[in-house]
Length: 251
Ligand code: NDP
Ligand code: 8X3
Image (cartoon, rainbow, N blue to C red; front, top):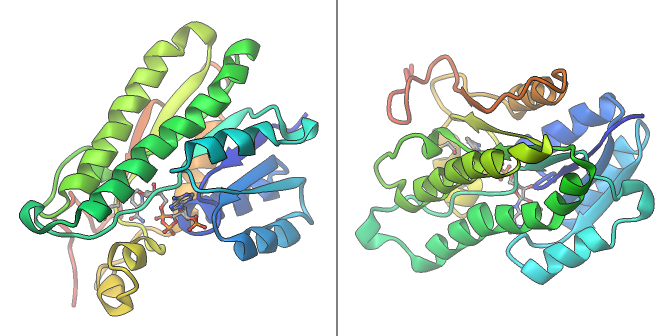
């Protein structure tokens, strides 16, 4: 029987590319996000290949997370694979100039949202003694770069939570691992720079960034390993990138 995967942040970027690739593999899919129109579009398009259920909620809203998961119809209620992907950077400012609203958004979405999702889904994995959680971290969770402060902190938290989950769920045979990308061209920089599309597109100029499909490929590889193989922590960057601050650009 094909597995059921729940993907947060499925309306854009890495989450959307993963949903598209998983649909081709005929995984049953629970797709989450806040933009209803995009969720419905995904349901219409990917529904040709597989069974899709969409859930519209904000991962920051703890009650909404739990009621969304409780509302899953029987045929989607056994989540085999959780892709904790929803998240963004908000702002790129030195710590003394940072906006506390941005800090709260990043900590509430990237860290607390990921925890709420996990808390809502893990108990049934524990009962079944099986499941796979993929946490989308970042190179920003492995090193800190100028003005990245709180976003980097949120992704360092994802790194720690990924390790903690793997330790605590070890007894139940649940696989836990992180995929940590470098620069991927998605809506990420549009969100970070609050719709300043010129500033956003400059981030990816002069080199070949990763595409969301590159990360989707890796996530599919991770989830299709034999059950005794757990890819615990994977870092992937564009060839042009050596670290958060070293990117070979030809402008
Ligand atoms: P996008 O902006 O393209 O996608 C972000 C997704 O997260 C959207 O589907 C959005 O859906 C969802 N999301 C954001 N906030 C919330 C919220 N409060 N509640 C529910 N869903 C939310 O960016 P990416 O695809 O690049 O980002 C996906 C993940 O990858 C993030 O965790 C990001 O930190 C990480 N990452 C990205 C990298 C990059 O360079 N792009 C590199 C390393 C990691 P909606 O708005 O519909 O709710
Ligand atoms: C996204 C990659 O370098 O913009 O997590 O922080 S970076």
